[in-house]
Image (tube, rainbow, N blue to C red; front, side):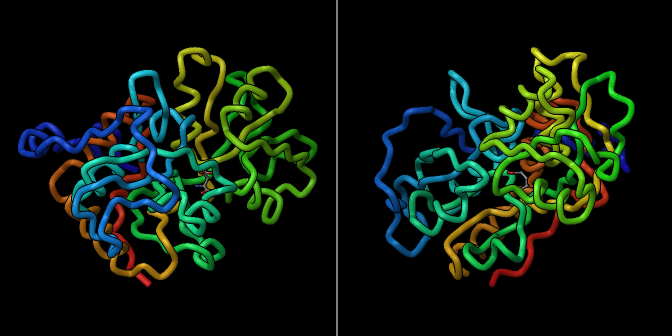
Length: 289
Ligand code: GLU
């Protein structure tokens, strides 16, 4: 695996040439009605507002703060939607378990929310991307020594989020004797870990690193650091919308080639000290279907 400095190398040079990405991060922007894309109906933008689903509580990825929205998902969403011709982004919270339903119901037009591309989800939504590859990992108390991987969880209390891939994988493929506690957000799991009601939290390494780096948990929590899955973050869109998918993929490629992808990653995820896997990042978008 490449060092953090290597994966982010080139920033200094490429970053200078790159233009700033869109920054429509004001919370409380006039909400458009469900399904109101503000475009001309062909997914091509043409000004107007696009409803984008993100997470509101994942530092470094999708976070709602007093001053606006921050995180890598937010940066990618701003870049892509601007490329698609939208003037304004209306960010809406899409918790893990509600993502497919919110795309299907038209409450959001696109989702950038640490949203893994899976065959089961493809039955209900389509995906552009991937634009990032993470891996499932475990978060434990800093002084924990007996939880070292997914097969060391029998008899332990593990927390994850309803409708996420990590919760399911532990039960299906690893510790069947684990006591799984599920909440609707990872913030609740991390609080439970800190207060001692659970022994570990599981989700993607990049998400866990963001929590561990939060000031209130400094020195208290640690990521085990042995990822055991490949989580390909896709852009969720209406099932079968190949036209939008291809436009999003072109925008993602441009973001990587221009250096903006790396710059955005450094600015957001970089803050936690997390090192993305340079063997898989940045990924090539897959064919749209
Ligand atoms: N990437 C995983 C998923 O889509 C976990 C993160 C999340 O719940 O957003 O389920």
